[in-house]
Amino acid sequence: MRKQRVLVLVHESLVPPESSDGYSEQQIDEWRTEYDVTTSLRAMGHEVKVLGLGDNLADLRNAIADWKPDVAFNLLEEFQGIVTYDQHVVAFLELMKLPYTGCNPRGMMISRDKVLSKQILSYHRIPTARFGLLPRKRRYREPRRLKFPLFVKSATEDASLGISQASIVHDAQKLRERVEFIHEQTSSDALVEEYIEGREIYIGVMGNERLTTFPLWELNFGTLPDVMAGIATRKVKWDRQYQRKHGIDTGPARDLPEGHEQRIAQLARRIYRALCLSGYARIDLRLKPDGSLFVLEANANPNLAQTEDFAVSALASSVGYDVLLLRIMKLGATYQAAWRQS
Image (cartoon, rainbow, N blue to C red; front, side):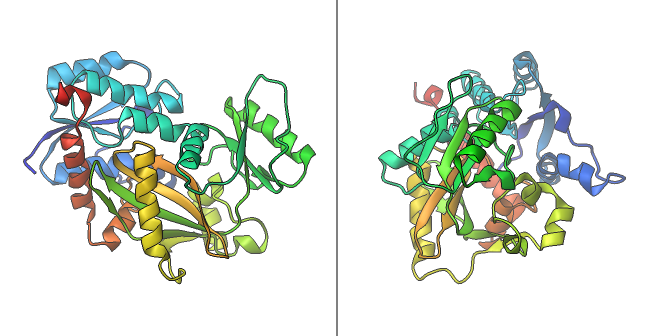
């Protein structure tokens, strides 16, 4: 790929420094993805401008008009403090006729809406846990057709926000308490689904029309299941001290039932297409002890830090970090947005 002008879009509080020297591990974790992407692109010879966005699209419009980038590398996970608004920034990029990396607005909207995505998956007969939606500011009605234990989470928030061991409930009273907690703490509707016990498997998918999958990755809960449920809480995902205490890590999924690697890869492609995804995504699944599979969710634009699952699983298939970023940019450059077809 020729050297390009790359406008890297990040949250205004996550603009990375030129160097990580002098920062603690905890500080670096806040902007690790932004730092890894920008430093790698610069090292490859691309001209990089980082734009921190909070709530003003005028800054983005001006940067596009004045600097004239070749592509926007989208690392936003929210806009105006609202998770589901990042899709509108991507839609704005399409209106400005600027190629961008990652998922298209429709795929972002569908995958961010966990209820809608589960409805679509169910329509396509893709196995997912039985669920119900309990909206905010409406009279509480216990879902009668679901069997305990149940898992309660936000219908829109990502990064395990609001998820803890208390998210698994075993009776009606605890269910109501947890639903009210989600309503109050996340200001979002509560998604209630039957809890699926089993191994947590991740698979990375890349592509627009032609899709590539990476080796299966697994979240190893270490000693955690000895004392509590193995679920990807916020502490499991982000607290390094907690991870070290319980031996929690991720790595290649081993000792799978025969034929499951191909089965999961095929299933991931079906999910990717059903949810109108593009660019790159990570599909999260649960593998029950009896070998049956259930989709947890699809994550458009997953974490791209060099040490995170998506990049490490790509490396396991001989796709190094620099090559991964270049492929992501190429997919953005060739995505057939509506303005290209008119």
